[in-house]
Image (cartoon, rainbow over all chains, first blue to last red):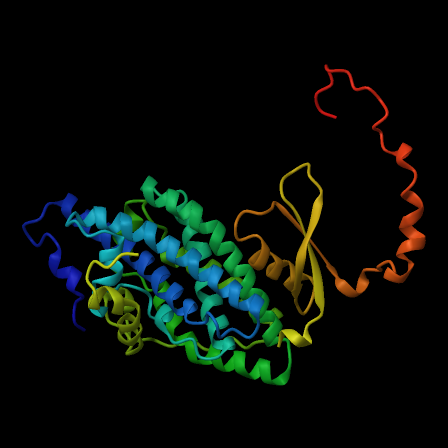
Length: 270
Length: 94
């Protein structure tokens, strides 16, 4: 597995503890921010294509909330990094291996059922993460989480509502949503797979222990799946690690479209 | 898809203490989805703090053909307007 580029910018063996913990915090904040940004961009692809005008606006609202979260988080990441990169530079001028989003977030929209499953699994995760981060020892992160939590609670209301509707709907909607769940489930392993960054954040009281969140997320997901008459797939060990900068083939294509304007006309503004 | 969904009328309370006002309509499969749709379509710019939705088919409307019979008789009863009273200057909010 190749290390993401931002790891090379760490303080190195000569760096102080403070530098190392800032580097870990930076990576943690980038993971959160990139996950929101990439998921928001994906949802934006629905604009003009959703099954109904009301859903078109609904998905766009979700996308805008997520991009708003990304702005706050990437803005903070830019300050932590201290190299003069702002939220726009981080969003539009980094390449795929520098993105630290969860692999689930970058998966293509597929059909509406696939988008709803991806959204529900991540909404349930974000609600848990942000609920815990509200009491982070990092007050900046706590404030961002407090704002994002309200948004994610609505996102979760939206996606769980649709999941139940589709799962407990017609034969075709049930089949489609179960298929989506079966194909995306393997990517949920990463949501709670703690690495050294997660351990360090938990030890510092900045972020929650992922193992504790996992139980709550899992129980909640089970409850919604039962109501949706869907079968929870078996857990699979999963080899991709978006949060370490190793991505599926889909992210590069998405970034090419997302970053096209800034790459072609550097510094362009409206 | 939205053509198969019934129509709901949307009412928004713009702030606490004010009444709900009709703002438009949305298509939705049921009342819960109608609330989500109303939220997403009509409250994007902080228009309100509370939503009502009601199935359009549950609204009974007056018949336009009966408008004369229903509303004309009120026309010559201007005395029903409270405009024949002198309002003291001290009364501010009337």
